[in-house]
Image (cartoon, rainbow, N blue to C red; front, side, top):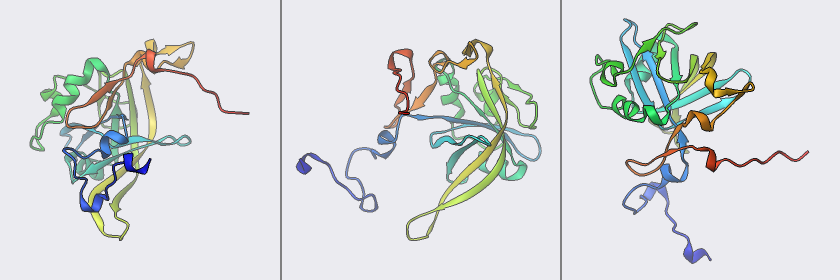
Length: 206
């Protein structure tokens, strides 16, 4: 059976047309991060290395591969917002990942509306049905197994406020499928839309 397995060591290259790593660890939720610099200039950018890491307090995080504007802004202010990417917002999200200068406002570029948050000074995306206001807990530069630092920073933040469209709460329970979240797949352009048909229930053993 082992002859049916493709094997490679990342340090030696994968030998494939496209690195499979992102496709294997996926689909992944998108970290659509709004931030602002010390002078109040806005930034909005999607990150494919994103997830939740703790219940109490709720902590989410994303990795900035390279020193991006979001990282610089968050280091300066200690705050950011996460905004849910839905199918209807996919094109706007894609526009916000354009490689533009730091003084370009991706809200304007993507035709989106910044709306004031309740606790943080960073605005969230009005059009997004779910947003988290976050305060930074840690910023960690990653390193390899040989302890060599790599140019990637993990930004962790405590969720201090949550905004949810009431239409997504069914008898008080958040309806994941109804939000139609978009997830990042592999390859240069693969995304997935989560729908109700892909849901199944499985309870933990007692």
